[in-house]
Image (cartoon, protein in one colour):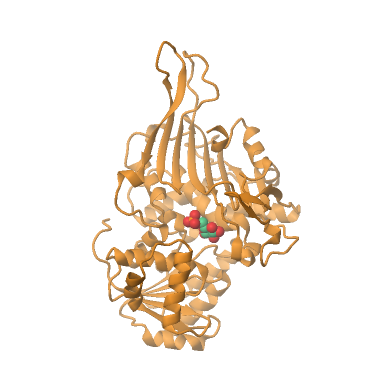
Length: 485
Ligand code: BG6
């Protein structure tokens, strides 16, 4: 499938347009696509919010917010882009307020409803759209994560939305799948012969997937209190990355084929017993500390957070995939807020050589490190002989930096996904079956934490998480990548 060429025009309806996600990520992504000539001039952006607001005020407030969130935006160009905006006041729970929306939409055009609201509103919004005949064959609905709080609530939402929209009209977004380097992992695995022969239990000792963030929960305390790191990050972003690392080669880039292969991985994840949860899952919460030399308050002191909260801001765990390719290879996953560095990376650790003829080279293992962010790099670590009259070996690495290899702008995850929604390409979106399988797998963790009242271990902001996270690997004879590098 070719992704070049002009896109057709569409009406993009943004529910929750005054919220953080739309202003910080979605509008800036669309702005970039607009600057690249990828948003048709006839495409309309219909921004919906609960409050009454003049369009002019919305345009300027969205600009200020986006710039403060470190997006690079030229004001003149933004004003040009904003000519495609309109703003409507809407109450998601009051069907009558959908009438003005229905009046301006044209059912012969592609209508895309992007639900960037609390998931509790998804049912009501889809019903109200249907009540006004807006769920026609040219319409698509985009659901932001987390979809529900557990399998039952996710099923409840999915069942409800399915009454009005067919599965191929539903785009469940996981923006990590839109990131260049996550897709590059597919290219690395399935566009080259080099790794496939090694990509299996016979040659790989362990896999680590880390998504560490320096930021705190900030103004999202209320959201976090209902979510936590397991639901916010691990159930979706990290498991999706695991799928791409572990999936079998798909026969094509067709959406159903790719989603089918990822689903097989999710269904092969070894069920976690209560005992596994006790031993192999670490729950953490940041306490005050410092990041980049600046003091940071603890989670319990954040706005809209219960001072006795037991919600986790960090989770690390060991997963296993029970299939022929991966049986016996531990997959260590870890994510957290207020950590030492912002980094998302996948570390593939290869097995040791069968016998050594060089003097002992310590704890070395060949490693392939795929860095998703902030840099997009692939590094391959191996041993090479030190120059001179010696047989000593030293670790060295091949370093591929995509920002140097490709001079064209690297698109943000949201930009690629938004353009795919307009194109009608579902391959980078999560199917309902995948989502169910992911919830099914994490549910024993949620249940065990609840049943046994497992409270998070504290970690100092600006570190790599609680000590128990290092111990989880050390017990099996492994180390997190930064502990070796
Ligand atoms: C979102 C989570 O899905 O991903 C946030 O809700 C998190 O808590 C964000 O900060 C991380 O995404 P990115 O692209 O900024 O690494």
